[in-house]
Amino acid sequence: MRTYDLERFKGITIAMYSSYNEAGDVDQEAARQLARYYAKSGVKGLYVGGSSGEGMLQSVEERKQMLEAVVAEVGQELTIIAHVGAAATHDSVELARHAEAVGAHAVSAVPAIYYRLSPQSVETHWQEIVDSTDLPFIIYHIPQTTGFQLSKSLLVKMAEQDKVIGVKISAESTFELQQFKAAGGKDFLVLNGPDEQYLAGRSIGADGGIGGTYGVMPELFLKIESCYVQGQMAEAQKWQFIVNELIVELLSFPSLYGACKAILKLRGYDTGEPRLPLLPIPAAELKRVEELNQRILSYISQAEGVVQE
Ligand SMILES: CC(=O)N[C@H](C=O)[C@@H](O)[C@H](O)[C@H](O)CO
Ligand SMILES: CC(=O)C(=O)O
Image (cartoon, rainbow, N blue to C red; front, side):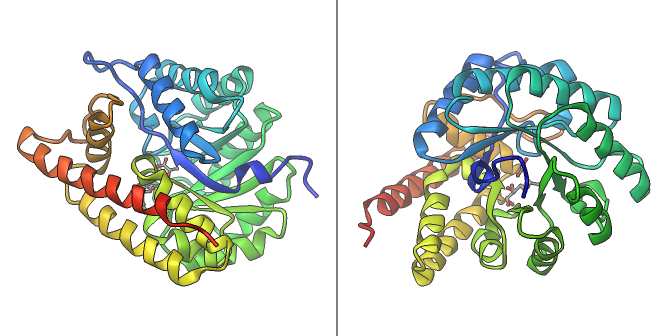
């Protein structure tokens, strides 16, 4: 048995977008408002500074500012996971210590980026982060962006430590997800990455998910989750299919994050543009964003209107 409470990490955790002002700097007030909006949606937690959160495009100082705003606003209500992955172990350790100091509930990290690293190097990187705080640690496995293939043996070695409580898997193989779940054992969390496969991941062993598109439709992922938990598989599948149509459309814009941020802006949460090299949404596409937002909102009211048995 682990000494950490794993329950608080199960279910739906939003990979939160970062908030910037017009000058493009971190906007803590806007981040607080967005965090508050999410707290009202009923999700379990927020993942700050990950892929969707553009942590890799921010300075260490800016990443601290984002995390501080979110923890200050909703740290008592939601589980806050701080992504501290960086190119340099030194920066990750600094961010992890900061996350602990300000009251985040866990830290998480991708393998160090840019260099093509050996498993031993990635292990050392993660271990330094793990050893730097008393917080639980969640591995972030996203080989399509980092190029690092996490082996089952390294996973098991990490998972043997009390502090290493789980892995977030953004690779698209649900078979690998199941294998990691089996290898990690009963007290090891596996969190689904690809939002398009939430139900598939959940069905094959995931304890929940962390995702970016949850941020524009948390209610729909909560719906899939509640149907799944109640054994209403056909209904769960129906909602996953709806979500997937919406994701395909989100992915048709110049950038996914730009589209999601534009949608949030339409709802009164202005988080600014994504940072380059992630592209903003050109004015000519805004009409299409508006239509998509309307579609999402109508599905949300439909999902919330359906009476559960
Ligand atoms: C690279 C990336 O952003 N991955 C996210 C987390 O795994 C997902 O939530 C995707 O945004 C989502 O599945 C849409 O493809
Ligand atoms: C973790 C994740 O889904 C993201 O940061 O986008």
